[in-house]
Length: 272
Ligand SMILES: N[C@@H](CCC[C@H](N)C(=O)O)C(=O)O
Image (cartoon, rainbow, N blue to C red; front, side, top):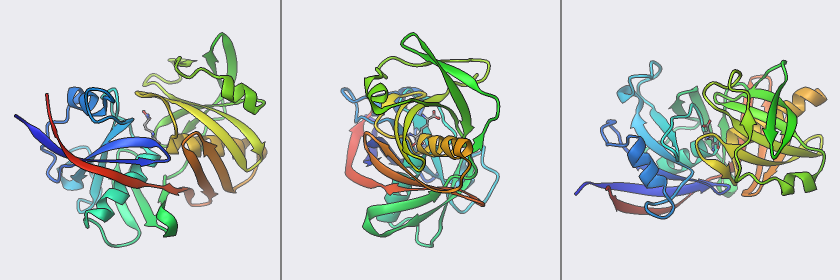
Protein backbone atom coordinates (compact mmCIF):
# COMPACT_ATOMS: atom_id res chain seq x y z
CA UNK A 1 0.00 0.00 0.00
CA UNK A 2 1.46 3.39 -1.03
CA UNK A 3 0.38 6.37 1.04
CA UNK A 4 1.05 10.06 0.57
CA UNK A 5 0.86 12.91 3.09
CA UNK A 6 -0.97 15.89 1.67
CA UNK A 7 -2.37 19.27 2.57
CA UNK A 8 -5.31 21.01 0.95
CA UNK A 9 -5.58 24.75 0.42
CA UNK A 10 -7.18 27.43 -1.70
CA UNK A 11 -6.80 31.00 -2.87
CA UNK A 12 -10.19 32.61 -3.57
CA UNK A 13 -11.63 29.08 -3.95
CA UNK A 14 -9.12 28.01 -6.62
CA UNK A 15 -8.15 24.86 -4.72
CA UNK A 16 -5.10 22.66 -4.61
CA UNK A 17 -3.76 19.44 -3.20
CA UNK A 18 -0.27 20.13 -1.83
CA UNK A 19 2.49 17.54 -1.38
CA UNK A 20 5.91 18.02 0.15
CA UNK A 21 8.54 16.15 -1.86
CA UNK A 22 11.92 17.66 -0.86
CA UNK A 23 13.98 15.36 -3.06
CA UNK A 24 11.57 15.03 -5.98
CA UNK A 25 11.06 11.31 -5.58
CA UNK A 26 7.30 10.92 -5.06
CA UNK A 27 5.34 9.03 -7.74
CA UNK A 28 3.13 11.91 -8.93
CA UNK A 29 2.68 11.18 -12.62
CA UNK A 30 -0.45 12.29 -14.54
CA UNK A 31 -2.56 9.35 -13.28
CA UNK A 32 -1.79 10.12 -9.64
CA UNK A 33 -2.47 13.84 -10.20
CA UNK A 34 -5.85 13.04 -11.77
CA UNK A 35 -6.67 10.75 -8.83
CA UNK A 36 -5.64 13.30 -6.18
CA UNK A 37 -7.62 16.09 -7.87
CA UNK A 38 -10.73 13.93 -8.40
CA UNK A 39 -13.52 15.42 -6.24
CA UNK A 40 -15.35 12.11 -5.82
CA UNK A 41 -12.74 9.35 -5.84
CA UNK A 42 -9.74 11.35 -4.55
CA UNK A 43 -9.11 14.50 -2.47
CA UNK A 44 -10.34 17.07 -4.97
CA UNK A 45 -8.68 20.15 -6.40
CA UNK A 46 -8.21 22.32 -9.47
CA UNK A 47 -4.55 21.35 -9.42
CA UNK A 48 -1.61 19.86 -7.55
CA UNK A 49 1.25 21.82 -5.94
CA UNK A 50 4.38 19.75 -5.34
CA UNK A 51 7.08 21.37 -3.20
CA UNK A 52 10.51 20.20 -4.34
CA UNK A 53 13.95 21.58 -3.52
CA UNK A 54 14.96 23.37 -6.76
CA UNK A 55 18.27 21.50 -6.91
CA UNK A 56 16.26 18.31 -7.58
CA UNK A 57 14.40 19.74 -10.59
CA UNK A 58 16.41 18.96 -13.76
CA UNK A 59 14.56 21.68 -15.70
CA UNK A 60 15.65 24.39 -13.21
CA UNK A 61 19.03 26.05 -13.75
CA UNK A 62 18.68 29.00 -11.37
CA UNK A 63 19.28 29.23 -7.61
CA UNK A 64 19.42 25.71 -6.19
CA UNK A 65 18.62 26.67 -2.57
CA UNK A 66 14.95 27.67 -3.04
CA UNK A 67 11.71 25.71 -3.28
CA UNK A 68 10.39 24.84 -6.72
CA UNK A 69 6.61 24.96 -7.25
CA UNK A 70 5.83 22.01 -9.51
CA UNK A 71 2.26 22.83 -10.60
CA UNK A 72 -0.02 20.36 -12.41
CA UNK A 73 -3.57 20.90 -13.65
CA UNK A 74 -6.34 18.54 -12.50
CA UNK A 75 -6.16 16.66 -15.82
CA UNK A 76 -2.51 15.82 -15.11
CA UNK A 77 -1.00 18.36 -17.54
CA UNK A 78 1.87 20.67 -16.59
CA UNK A 79 1.48 24.45 -16.52
CA UNK A 80 4.18 27.08 -16.37
CA UNK A 81 2.60 29.21 -13.66
CA UNK A 82 -0.32 29.43 -11.24
CA UNK A 83 -0.93 32.71 -9.43
CA UNK A 84 -3.36 31.46 -6.80
CA UNK A 85 -1.30 28.30 -6.43
CA UNK A 86 1.85 30.32 -5.74
CA UNK A 87 0.21 32.14 -2.81
CA UNK A 88 -1.15 28.87 -1.39
CA UNK A 89 2.28 27.26 -1.89
CA UNK A 90 3.91 30.08 0.09
CA UNK A 91 1.27 29.81 2.83
CA UNK A 92 2.00 26.08 3.11
CA UNK A 93 5.79 26.64 3.31
CA UNK A 94 5.30 29.32 5.98
CA UNK A 95 3.02 27.11 8.10
CA UNK A 96 5.46 24.20 7.82
CA UNK A 97 8.36 26.45 8.87
CA UNK A 98 10.15 25.78 5.58
CA UNK A 99 10.82 29.45 4.67
CA UNK A 100 11.64 32.50 6.73
CA UNK A 101 13.28 35.39 4.86
CA UNK A 102 11.13 37.97 3.09
CA UNK A 103 10.74 38.27 0.17
CA UNK A 104 10.32 34.52 -0.16
CA UNK A 105 11.78 33.38 -3.46
CA UNK A 106 10.10 30.51 -5.30
CA UNK A 107 11.32 28.82 -8.47
CA UNK A 108 8.65 28.09 -11.09
CA UNK A 109 8.59 27.01 -14.74
CA UNK A 110 8.03 30.72 -15.54
CA UNK A 111 11.10 31.84 -13.57
CA UNK A 112 11.99 32.96 -10.05
CA UNK A 113 9.05 34.70 -8.32
CA UNK A 114 8.87 36.55 -4.99
CA UNK A 115 6.25 36.61 -2.25
CA UNK A 116 5.50 38.91 0.69
CA UNK A 117 3.14 37.76 3.46
CA UNK A 118 0.87 40.66 4.50
CA UNK A 119 -1.56 41.28 7.35
CA UNK A 120 -5.08 39.87 7.13
CA UNK A 121 -4.11 36.54 5.58
CA UNK A 122 -3.04 38.15 2.33
CA UNK A 123 0.03 37.32 0.26
CA UNK A 124 1.50 39.55 -2.45
CA UNK A 125 3.40 37.83 -5.24
CA UNK A 126 5.41 38.93 -8.23
CA UNK A 127 4.51 37.33 -11.56
CA UNK A 128 7.20 38.70 -13.86
CA UNK A 129 5.88 40.71 -16.81
CA UNK A 130 2.48 40.29 -18.48
CA UNK A 131 2.99 40.52 -22.25
CA UNK A 132 -0.08 41.79 -24.12
CA UNK A 133 0.05 40.79 -27.81
CA UNK A 134 -0.78 43.44 -30.41
CA UNK A 135 -2.31 41.02 -32.92
CA UNK A 136 -5.93 40.26 -32.06
CA UNK A 137 -7.34 36.75 -32.10
CA UNK A 138 -10.80 35.25 -31.50
CA UNK A 139 -12.62 32.93 -29.14
CA UNK A 140 -15.84 31.12 -30.06
CA UNK A 141 -18.37 30.11 -27.45
CA UNK A 142 -22.05 29.11 -27.73
CA UNK A 143 -22.13 30.04 -31.41
CA UNK A 144 -20.68 33.54 -30.89
CA UNK A 145 -17.25 34.64 -32.09
CA UNK A 146 -15.63 37.21 -29.79
CA UNK A 147 -12.51 39.33 -30.45
CA UNK A 148 -9.83 38.30 -27.94
CA UNK A 149 -6.48 39.58 -26.69
CA UNK A 150 -3.57 37.25 -26.07
CA UNK A 151 -1.72 37.81 -22.79
CA UNK A 152 1.32 35.83 -21.67
CA UNK A 153 1.69 35.68 -17.88
CA UNK A 154 4.21 32.85 -18.06
CA UNK A 155 1.22 30.75 -19.15
CA UNK A 156 -1.11 31.59 -22.06
CA UNK A 157 -4.38 33.53 -21.81
CA UNK A 158 -7.06 34.68 -24.27
CA UNK A 159 -8.99 37.60 -22.82
CA UNK A 160 -12.49 38.57 -24.00
CA UNK A 161 -14.23 41.77 -22.90
CA UNK A 162 -18.03 41.59 -22.64
CA UNK A 163 -20.44 44.52 -22.64
CA UNK A 164 -22.30 43.86 -19.41
CA UNK A 165 -22.64 41.71 -16.33
CA UNK A 166 -25.76 39.92 -17.62
CA UNK A 167 -23.74 38.60 -20.57
CA UNK A 168 -20.99 37.46 -18.16
CA UNK A 169 -23.49 35.71 -15.87
CA UNK A 170 -25.23 34.00 -18.80
CA UNK A 171 -22.10 32.19 -20.06
CA UNK A 172 -22.19 28.42 -19.71
CA UNK A 173 -18.53 27.72 -19.01
CA UNK A 174 -19.31 24.05 -18.51
CA UNK A 175 -18.77 24.16 -22.26
CA UNK A 176 -15.16 24.79 -23.28
CA UNK A 177 -14.54 27.87 -25.46
CA UNK A 178 -13.00 27.23 -28.89
CA UNK A 179 -9.75 29.01 -29.76
CA UNK A 180 -7.30 29.24 -32.68
CA UNK A 181 -4.96 26.24 -32.29
CA UNK A 182 -2.34 27.97 -34.41
CA UNK A 183 -2.08 30.76 -31.87
CA UNK A 184 -2.34 28.43 -28.87
CA UNK A 185 -0.80 25.08 -29.84
CA UNK A 186 -0.49 24.13 -26.14
CA UNK A 187 -4.05 25.22 -25.29
CA UNK A 188 -5.09 28.39 -23.48
CA UNK A 189 -6.88 29.73 -20.44
CA UNK A 190 -9.88 31.83 -21.54
CA UNK A 191 -11.08 34.78 -19.46
CA UNK A 192 -14.29 36.75 -20.00
CA UNK A 193 -14.56 40.06 -18.19
CA UNK A 194 -16.64 43.19 -17.81
CA UNK A 195 -15.16 46.58 -16.88
CA UNK A 196 -17.35 47.97 -14.07
CA UNK A 197 -14.92 50.90 -14.13
CA UNK A 198 -11.47 51.29 -15.75
CA UNK A 199 -9.80 49.73 -12.70
CA UNK A 200 -12.66 47.58 -11.42
CA UNK A 201 -13.19 44.35 -13.35
CA UNK A 202 -15.48 41.32 -12.99
CA UNK A 203 -14.20 38.07 -14.48
CA UNK A 204 -15.00 34.41 -15.13
CA UNK A 205 -12.51 31.88 -16.44
CA UNK A 206 -12.29 28.57 -18.23
CA UNK A 207 -8.88 27.12 -17.32
CA UNK A 208 -6.78 24.95 -19.57
CA UNK A 209 -6.55 21.49 -18.06
CA UNK A 210 -9.33 22.11 -15.52
CA UNK A 211 -12.57 23.71 -16.81
CA UNK A 212 -14.39 26.59 -15.16
CA UNK A 213 -12.76 27.54 -11.85
CA UNK A 214 -13.87 30.13 -9.29
CA UNK A 215 -10.63 32.06 -9.65
CA UNK A 216 -7.39 32.10 -11.64
CA UNK A 217 -4.54 34.34 -10.46
CA UNK A 218 -2.70 34.53 -13.78
CA UNK A 219 -6.05 35.06 -15.55
CA UNK A 220 -6.81 37.95 -13.21
CA UNK A 221 -3.46 39.52 -14.08
CA UNK A 222 -4.15 38.87 -17.79
CA UNK A 223 -7.50 40.75 -17.79
CA UNK A 224 -5.99 43.63 -15.79
CA UNK A 225 -3.07 43.86 -18.25
CA UNK A 226 -5.38 43.71 -21.29
CA UNK A 227 -7.67 46.39 -19.85
CA UNK A 228 -4.71 48.60 -18.96
CA UNK A 229 -3.23 48.20 -22.44
CA UNK A 230 -6.55 49.21 -24.05
CA UNK A 231 -7.24 52.11 -21.67
CA UNK A 232 -3.57 53.20 -21.48
CA UNK A 233 -2.80 53.18 -17.75
CA UNK A 234 -0.57 51.54 -15.14
CA UNK A 235 -1.11 51.02 -11.44
CA UNK A 236 -3.73 49.20 -9.39
CA UNK A 237 -6.69 47.22 -10.69
CA UNK A 238 -9.34 45.41 -8.59
CA UNK A 239 -10.58 42.16 -10.07
CA UNK A 240 -13.62 40.26 -8.74
CA UNK A 241 -14.15 36.59 -9.50
CA UNK A 242 -16.79 34.13 -8.24
CA UNK A 243 -14.34 33.01 -5.52
CA UNK A 244 -13.45 36.45 -4.16
CA UNK A 245 -11.57 39.70 -4.75
CA UNK A 246 -7.95 40.31 -5.71
CA UNK A 247 -5.73 43.27 -6.42
CA UNK A 248 -3.32 43.57 -9.35
CA UNK A 249 -0.51 46.11 -9.48
CA UNK A 250 0.86 46.84 -12.94
CA UNK A 251 4.21 48.45 -12.18
CA UNK A 252 7.30 49.44 -14.20
CA UNK A 253 9.22 46.51 -12.80
CA UNK A 254 6.53 43.87 -13.34
CA UNK A 255 3.11 42.70 -12.24
CA UNK A 256 2.07 41.87 -8.69
CA UNK A 257 -1.00 40.05 -7.38
CA UNK A 258 -2.37 40.31 -3.84
CA UNK A 259 -5.00 37.99 -2.40
CA UNK A 260 -5.78 35.50 0.34
CA UNK A 261 -4.30 32.02 0.67
CA UNK A 262 -5.23 29.37 3.23
CA UNK A 263 -4.35 25.79 4.05
CA UNK A 264 -7.51 24.06 5.28
CA UNK A 265 -6.60 20.41 5.82
CA UNK A 266 -3.81 17.87 6.29
CA UNK A 267 -4.10 14.15 5.78
CA UNK A 268 -2.85 10.90 4.37
CA UNK A 269 -4.19 9.38 1.18
CA UNK A 270 -3.87 5.81 -0.06
CA UNK A 271 -2.80 5.78 -3.70
CA UNK A 272 -4.69 3.37 -5.98
N1 LIG B 1 -5.33 28.62 -11.50
C1 LIG B 1 -4.09 29.12 -11.91
C2 LIG B 1 -3.62 28.78 -13.30
C3 LIG B 1 -3.31 27.30 -13.42
C4 LIG B 1 -2.68 26.90 -14.73
C5 LIG B 1 -3.58 27.01 -15.91
N2 LIG B 1 -4.74 26.17 -15.82
C6 LIG B 1 -2.78 26.67 -17.18
O1 LIG B 1 -2.87 25.54 -17.69
O2 LIG B 1 -2.04 27.55 -17.64
C7 LIG B 1 -3.80 30.53 -11.49
O3 LIG B 1 -4.26 30.88 -10.39
O4 LIG B 1 -3.06 31.24 -12.15
